[in-house]
Picture 1 (cartoon, helix red, strand yellow):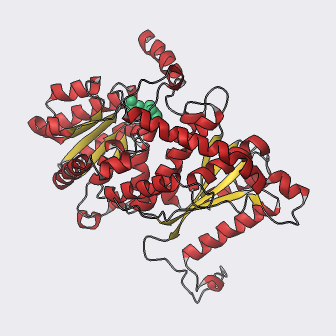
Picture 2 (cartoon, rainbow, N blue to C red):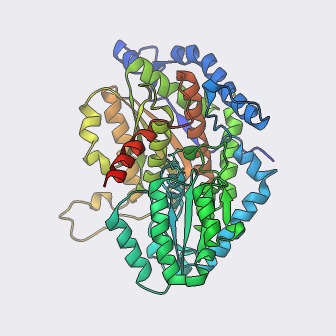
Picture 3 (cartoon, rainbow, N blue to C red):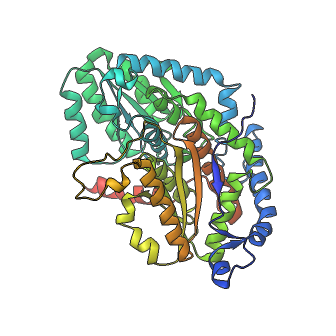
Length: 471
Ligand code: PA5
C-alpha cells in the first residue's frame, strides 16, 4: 500500500515559547523547546512500546500480568483492513449496501465505545439534517437513530412511536463487545420485540449484530434466526473505545453511505507519521508531549477540546470517553472537556477566560466548509447594523471568533494549541481518530497507566444490580 502524507496539522506554537524576549510569565505558563527535548527520548521509547505491544499480540505471545488487558490491535487495523483482511471490509460494505437499500430507518443500539465512533462519523460527515431529507437527498441511505446508549424510557418510547407511525421498513444494528451490557441488551429486547411485531418472520433478516463470538448477544441472535452472515465479530484484542475502525464504527458508517476505505487510509497515513521521529512530522507524539507537559509542569489538568462548528461535537464526545476511560485510573489522568464554539463561549467562556489556570485548550476545526458557504445578506433595513458584515460569510465570522478567542486567551497567557483538518470528511476523521487513539496509548505508557480496560466502570454495575435484584 502506498503511504500517503497526512493532511491533519497539529500546531503547538500557541503553547511553546520560542521568543528570546519571552518573560517569566510566558515561560511559567507555556512550554519551552527544552521541555520538549527533555521529554522526547522517553516519548519515543513509549511509542516503541506501543508498537511492541501490537507486535506481541500479532505474534500471539503471552500477555504479562502487569500488561493485561492488552487490547492493542486497534493500531494495525488500518493496514490489515486495507490489505490482508480486505475481504472483511468488502463484506461490511456489501451487507451495509443491501441493508441500506432495503430499509428506510436503521436503529443503532450500543453504548460507550460501541456507539460513539459511529455517532461521531454520522454527525461530522453526513448532512446535518440527514434524517429530515427525502431519500434521494440522502444518497438513498436510511434514516439513522441511536438508542441503547442510556436507560431513558421517554426517549425509547419516542423512537418506538416514530418507528410505528408508518409502514416504512426498519432494522436494527446491535453492537456490544461483551454482549451483556444492560443498556444495550434491554434496548435490543425492546426494539426486537417491536421489530417482530412490525416485520413478523422477516424480523431476523433485519438485524445486524457486532459482538464477541459466543457472547449472550451472539447466542440470542442465533436463536432468533439472524443469518450467520449478519453476525460480525468484535475482535477480542481491540478495546471498546478503540474500536471505531472495526465493524463497530465502520459497519454503521457504511450504512450511512460513508467511504470507509477513506477512513482507513487516513488512519494508515497517521500510523506512518507515528513512526517518524520529529516533533513537526509526528502529531501523535507532539500532541502527547504538549498535553503531558502542560499537565505535569503547568497544572493544566483539564484538556479543553474546543470544536469550532457543531458537526464536531460528537467527535469530541468520542474523545472524552477515550481519554477518561483509558487514563482515568489510580488517581491519575487529565479531565477532557469538549466544547462547541461559539455556542459555549456564551456558557463556559467566562470561566475559560478568567477562571482557574488549570486548562490547556486545543482548537479543532476543518479548514474548508463541506457545503456552499452562507453569506450575510445586505439589507435596506440596517437597524441591526449588520450591513458592515454583508460581504462576509458565516465561516468568516466563525474564523474571526476563533482567532479572536485565541488572542484573548493568549493575552492572559492561557494556552491554545490547534488541530486542523483539511475538511470534515472520512479521510480526515480517520487521521484524527488514529492520532488520538495512539496518543492515548502512548500517554498511558508514559504515566504508567494501562490504557486498556476499564475496571472502574464495573463498580456502578455491581451496585446497580443490588438495587435491581432488591426491587
Ligand atoms: O471502552 C469500553 O470498553 C467501554 O466504553 C465499552 O465500549 C462500553 O462499556 C460498552 O461495552 P460493550 O461493547 O461490551 O457493550
